[in-house]
Length: 333
Image: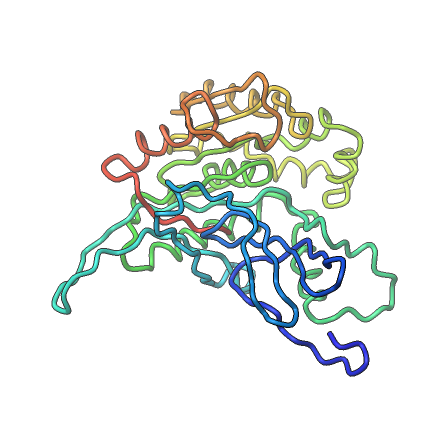
């Protein structure tokens, strides 16, 4: 930006994220970090006068660099509340051929629900009363407040609407739509399996998710109890909201297999939350698989072997859900 005129010049554009810019000692080039869906983060330099860009680090291994990675495609669908949900679709390449060739591809699909019910980067409570918010902030505030006094009800319906939307798309196998997520996303997975009279999902994978909100509130740290109370109030004064949002009381409705994963060192969602859900599934005679990880905390789900959460998810996915075909479409909600 030209500070004297306010004119903005685009130095470099791209589908990814540019971050951590730093000036050179003489001010003639910038270094920055760049990543996009097809490339991991690397350092680059950009000449301010020449516009020449040079890649400085090469973190993409050759075995991955030679692959044609898929770039997520933005899609949207109307939710129950009337809001339009924007999400990303990640699908394998469709086979191509001569103009007369029409491939018939029916793919298994999954919906990945993101953890945390509240955007941490913006708080409506930080805006003084009477201040006018920009339109995008007002929309974000109104959307966030749909979760006040409502966990596991309206947002569950939004996930079920996503499954119905997927069923309307060509090339999607309606009998092989799965849902998975961690933390609040794991909670959403449990809610969807418990509140789905149409049985839209073939299975669910929940990583460190809750099923009994009062129990989780009582066992988590003080700051996380306060976080919950921002949305739902204190359980002593708002007990019905907590109970209505606890899918453990609808365990009899679960008809599809579930994989439950939890790290025993998790200090955010207590491991007892998964144990309660597993015990309820056992009592009800449901089909599930339960794996714990003695040295894992929340979010430590990277891995490529069967002894890791990532490997367990893949085995469950291909063995129970995908069956004949382990490739599929993933929708990030």
